[in-house]
Image 1 (tube, rainbow over the protein chains, first blue to last red):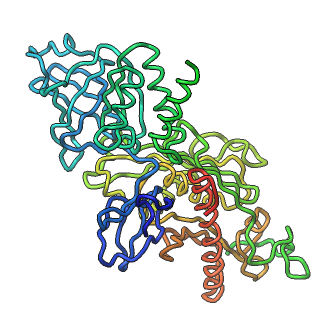
Image 2 (image 1 turned 45 degrees about the vertical axis):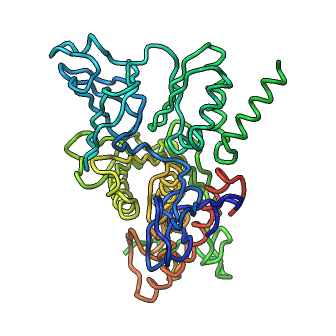
Image 3 (image 1 turned 30 degrees about the vertical axis):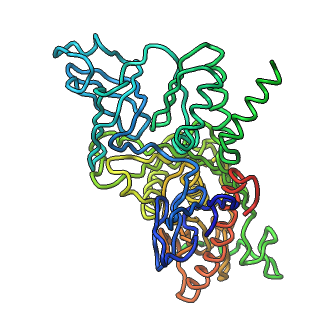
Length: 229
Length: 243
């Protein structure tokens, strides 16, 4: 049960696998309790932290939560609202009252059209998965330049690192502005070489992330860049 | 009662089956996870001469809206046999049999997937039988379970499809084509190997209570073996090694 702790070898668990007794511990995400035993419900790496046993899933769908910073793509436009693809099961709804501009009824398309990319925040999610977005807030805006790269949702925290350390290192290494949304999309803006470097780092994480940390990948890429120079 | 082919010999004089297997021996099984890059999860199962590929997409918003459930996800299964999967060409598209198998597979999967986590959503499971040699619904269920796990869909357990039957008044595990066509009974079951629960059960033909118990004993034994192969397939994909 110590797998997932610092220094311990990680253990891959599959749905239905008994991962230990439940006495004295709490069940985290990806774990259910059956007959005083913890049962994994998802394919992933077992983690035990602060007396809570959970599974870090290998694949996971984005489940929006209130307050999440997301990179959305406009999917539909109505007279007074936009529907956004937020990389989740359901589209997010951005009403014109929560847009950063004063929008006349029927003029929504003049501000944002289908395919536009925005940086927004999840305002509210109800129990039926209706998602309301907002663009009122510092830094929330339409993204006119740059590139969007997909990151598997389960790797978002690994790209950021603790206190955004790894994300800042990637920003410094490629000299780009990078915003990583909770919904598994990263927005990268900078020189074309910098964007290509950041995309390569992220794609390498997607390919090898289950066996390598993002810090190792960044080290390798930085050493390779220095070697090439 | 199934059969009516009393003159067809399905057991050798030494008690072994026509393909040399013992009565409680399964056909060889191999499983590969994550074979389709476009799907959220996928798997290929080879069970004897059966080959099934399963792909999972979602959870996604359930369309049309009338199929949405406010408190849970629906599982939309499409089981299909490829036209070239049998010696006689199968007319492409849905038929009565594929609809029935899609329905029972969906109900079996709904009992293990934590559908309450995804209200108003749909999880799409596509099962394509590329080669058929008896027992395709069981192979399809096994493939779907591995594909669901590969897609990261939360489940109580990984369901395993297995079948036993009766030939020449003898209970045997895992019927092949001749045994399925000319045998006396067929008992396909969906088993949750960790809890020992049964998620689906069908029976064609007649079995006495003792024969039924023996068939289920064979099924549970086979389910454990297949489950180990399923876990190995997932570990090979992500852990780079065996369990």
